[in-house]
Length: 135
Image 1 (cartoon, rainbow, N blue to C red):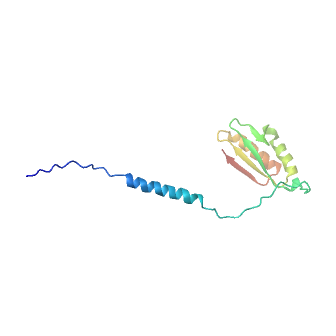
Image 2 (cartoon, rainbow, N blue to C red; image 1 turned 90 degrees about the vertical axis):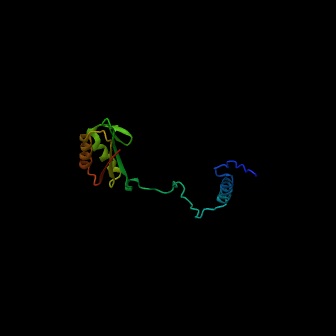
């Protein structure tokens, strides 16, 4: 009588063929992606303005940025301004650009009293459009 000895087979799945297929697909996508041409049109962007053109700066409509930081300092045109001179500074800018609007950017930690002073100054300066935002 013949005895048969059964050895334990490995219960693991052989991943080598699957990895081969994945690497072949990866190579295929890398090669085909390099040949893809994006559709679109070339746009000629305008160059710098010519000196021959005379533009009246007073007709431009700009936004006057008034910033209030956490320590209640008021900034207009990248400089610190005294709260009593906010109206005069806004009027000075409005003299150059009459149809401009004001954007007040207040820090969350600034006091409401400072914000109200700036809004009142903008109103007294004659600004038609005042917008308030916070950081």
